[in-house]
Length: 352
Image (cartoon, rainbow, N blue to C red; front, side, top):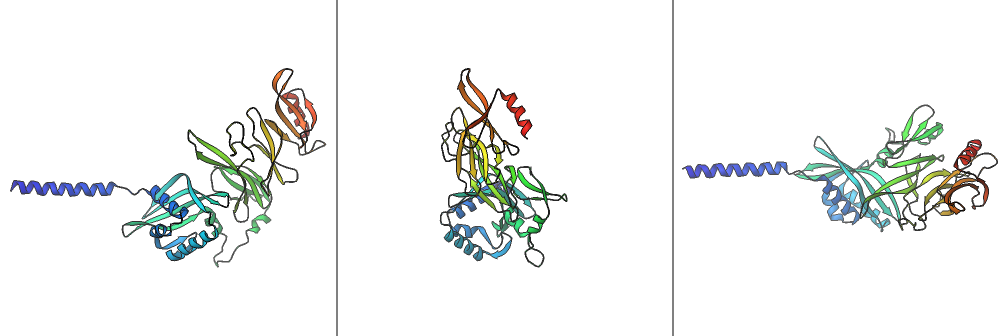
């Protein structure tokens, strides 16, 4: 009798233990996001279909699973070299019976890459976590353009309000209007140096990468439309390997400055072991032109020296290697030399 009682107690204990273990075993939503990304990037429709619920809020449009899969197939057909990857951390938040996973995805098409702040929403259906919503912040904000009657509002009304300024807050670009209102137009969280160009804003985006020995950041020059938040890559590669890292990637963009005709961006970038280079990039085509060596520059916008560059260049002269300051044109022809940094600074104060 005691043996039967002991066996019964042991059995109940084992059942309770197994139950506790099952309750404590939490779903790894990072793995689900990575599985979804793998299915999309590898064009594995069967795997992707198994992750979707029967109906999905798909980029702000309610669709059936079959419609979503049909959209994916059409997209793959038009973009056969498409790939997609997840960048950085996946942030997971649970609200009621849903779990929202937020992340940055990089979409690669035709040798161009763009990043989007994206998310998936999961809900447990028949004891399995299914995707009930798939979208990104660009799509979410674009959908706000539609009024209650689903007719498109003219975002160009915003352009009728005079733009007072552009600013960066928490790595995102905001435009500020004269009436005090503002509008966020990028959502990546890694943007800097915005330059207002009318219908577009030129800016620098920092991309965090994991290297073999350490993490690092590279840079991309981008355009974003004020109208519909559409982003366009200008350039993310140098046309040469630099002498420090033997890499085409852009690691530094120093003093990005717009040309007088607003068609080019001047900046200083890594080039040789002992010296950087001042370059110009065509904003429309992304084409690079190397101008001259230098570790520092200021571009003059006004007065009789308009269009010239004050540069600091490392050279070996009578006193050995030092930084020498001079005024040059775009071809590198020296127009004026300065005794030292102090006299160069004093000159700049007179032409600003």
